[in-house]
Amino acid sequence: MSLPPFAVTVVGSWPRPRRLLDARRRRAPDLLELEDEAVRQAIAAQVEAGADLVSDGEQRRGDFTSFVAERLDGVEAMTMADLLDHVEDKAAFEALLSALDVPAFAIRNPTATGRLARRSPLAADEAAFAATCTDRPLKVCLPGPYLLSRTMWVEALSSAAYGSRDELVDDIVRVLREELADLAAAGVACVQLDEPALSELVLAGKSATRTFMCGALAAAASPEQELELAVDAVNRVVDGADGIEVALHVCRGNWSADESVLLAGGYAPLVPTLARMRVDRFVLEYATDRAGPLEALAGLPPGAGLGLGAVNPRTQALEPVEAIVARARAAADLLGPERIQLNPDCGFATFAERPVATDASARAKLGALAAAARVLRATG
Image (cartoon, rainbow, N blue to C red; front, side, top):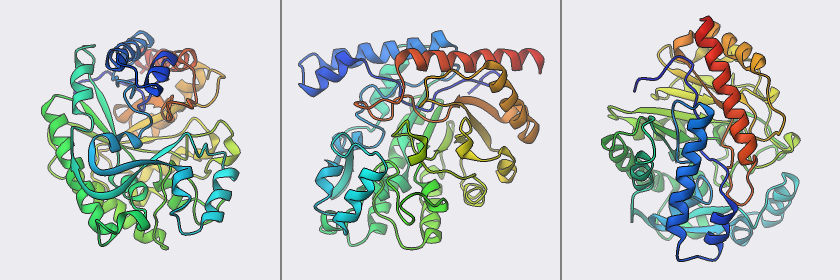
C-alpha cells in the first residue's frame, strides 16, 4: 500500500442516510439498492473531503459489532434490554446502563448461542462492492477477537455450545483468520481490528470494575488475565497475514456526546500490552484531553505506525487546522513523520440509529484533517 505522508483516513463508520435507516427498519424490498447508494455516497464524501484511505462507511451494518450476527451461525443479536434477563446482576447492570447514558433498546449485542461458523463473509462482500466505487485504497473494519469474546460470551446463553469462554475464543480467532485471508486476497489495503474495550481494563470508569464499553459484558476478575487473553487472541488472528496492513483501534467509548460518562486516562498503562501485539499500526484517540499525553506512545514498537486521532467525532465544533498540524508535528517529533496517519478519534456513526456526527460535520472534520495534511506535506 502506497500512501502519501500524513495520509488521511477514517476510523470506520459514516452517518447513514435517513432513507436507508427507514428502509432497514421496515425491511424494504429495495434495501440492497439503498445500501449500495449509501456506500457510494459515503465513499464519495470521503474522497471529496480529501481522504487517502477510505472505508465503505459501514453502511450495511447496524453498528460495528452486532452485524456479525447476520453473517455467522451460532450468534444472535440481542438488545441490552434483552440481556438484562441473563446477566449475573440484573439490578447493577440496569443501573450501569442508566448512569452511562447507554441506549439499552437501540444497541444490539452479538451473543453466542451455538457453535460459530461463517454463513457468509463478514466483510469481504462489502469490500468487493466498495472497490467498484473508488480507485482509492480501502480500509475494512472488523471487531477484534478480544471485543468479540467480551460481547459474545453470556454464560447463561453460551455455555450450552461452549464449555468455556476460552473455547469460544478459539472459534472467534478461526473466523477472523478466515476473513482476513479473504480480504487480503481481494486486495484490501488495511484491515482494522476494533478493540475499544482494552482501555476499560486499565482505566477506572464510573462503574469501578465494569463499564459498558460498546456492549462488552464478559470479563474475568483480573485485568491482567484479560490483557493476556487479548494479546494472545490478536496475535493468533494476524499470524501469517501477508500483503495487507493490520491496524488495531483503541479508544475510550463513542456512544455519547457527554464526555463525563466516557473513560478518561492516558495510554501509558496500556502501551506495554499494545507493544506485544504484532500489528502494523495503532489507531488511537488523541483529539480529547481524556487521552492523556502523546509521550506515552514512545513505548510502541519502532516499526509500528500511528493513526493519530486529531478531530473529535462527537462534537460539532470544528478543530482549527493549525491545532491539527501542531498535534501531528508533536507526534511526528516523537515517532517520526513516516509513521503518522491522521484520522478522527473514532467512527463518525458508531450506532446507525444514534450517530455521534452529522454528514456535514463528518465532511468538515475530515476536510480539516486533509487541509492539515497538505500543510504538513508542504512544510515537512
